[in-house]
Length: 291
Image (tube, rainbow, N blue to C red; front, side, top):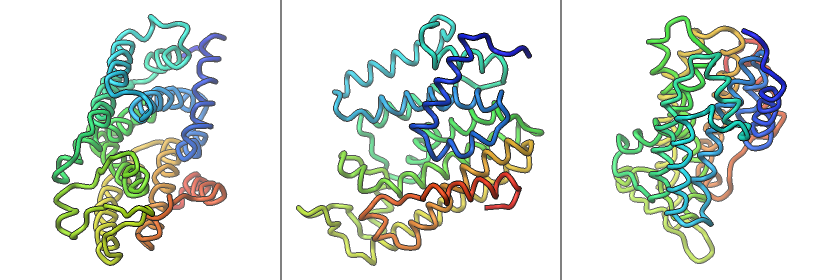
């Protein structure tokens, strides 16, 4: 297919900058793709980031955020009608070049609307719906760019990999989410381990450390099961796409291992990886050396 025109190329550059500055964990994987796929996936992530940012804007009233999400849903249905919007311009071009399932963005918006409404999750099945909306959908959108030797089998694996990453995010952000009045861990899991995630006036969790440790490791083991399913996607992708997905999964999986190694410390401070660690994971993914 022909190269994008100057205006579209500029729109793609804008999306790549969004990824580089606002989605740094994903940026390590996306940069491993060849140019056309890198540009397309950057457009996908830039629009996904826009939706996430609306949902996470806690300084804006809920009704206003819901209205913005509704507006983005409408704009998504008419991508070519917004030539001044670089993200939609790039996304429209990417969708013409790749079989991107744009309807999955509707699921992402569904999940963000649930965030804005303050939904809580009683069981893991309830939480799984949310994870599939906000992350499984992104996995399926990404697969549209990657493409696969067996699309029918690849779709549920891409979905599972997204769920694994989202479960990791949830464990990483327990404290931050709590400060924003959000609890994502299923209520039945909290009850099972005798935890409330309530904190005292200094911000320290009131639950006994041994209970918190057991809870976090239980959830981490669950996430590992989803990684095991999701990583079966990689052999179904071309080498560069597998490297991209492998780098993203590897970074988040290493983050999960660090959380599980010391759950109490992970609950006290946001767990992260240093740049050199992410680069090392990406290099191994590009070389095809597992995690």
